[in-house]
Image (cartoon, rainbow, N blue to C red; front, top):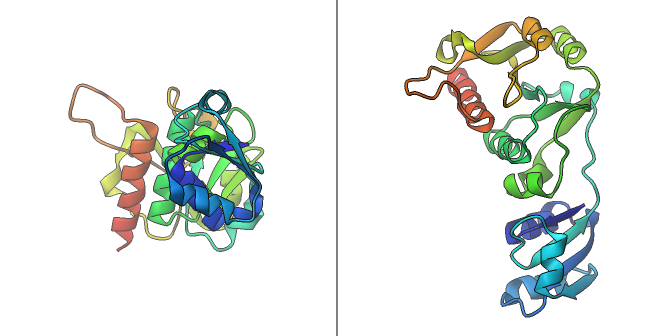
Length: 231
C-alpha cells in the first residue's frame, strides 16, 4: 500500500517503521529534514521525478511517498476484553469519512473501531492521510456479521447506542458503563436489523435547513458527549 504526505511520513516512521518497505522522495525536494531523516532511517530510499510521483499518488503527496505493508486488522476477541468505548461502523463508504472518524476516535481515546468485512471502505492511502496517520495507533477489528457482533457485545455488558434522526436527544442518554456507538452509512443510515439490535437510538437535534450531519462530524459530537457524560 502506498501512503503519502509529510505528516504520514513522520508518524509512520515513529510508530510503524518495521512495516515500511521503501521511501520514495521527489527529486529536488527542498526539505532537508525529510531527506536526512529518510537517509538515516536504514530504509531503502528511492528518488523519482514529480510526474512519476503524481502517477503513484492519488492526492497531494508533498514530495514523499511510503510503500508500506497493508494494515493488519484485529479480531473481535482481540479488542473486546479491555474495551469500554467502541465505535461500530455500519458500512461507511467514503474514505474521507472513515479517515476522519479514525482521527476523532484516536484523539478521544476510543478503544477500538469495528467494521464489517463486506461493503465497507478499505483502508487505503486516502484513509491514512485523512486520519493524519492516527490509523497507526487505532485498533480496527473486522467482523463477518454486525448483528451477531452486537449480540456478543451485549453478552459482555455493552450498551449499544445507535444513531438516527428519529430517536432520543443524544444529551438525554446515560452513557455510563460500557458503550458501543453505532454509526450508519452516509446515505442509508443504519440497516434495519442493526437498528433493531440497538438498546438506544441517539439523535442530534437539527436547527437549520439541513436535516443531517456528515457521518464523521456526527461521530465526533456523539463520542465527546459520551466522554462528557461519564465525567
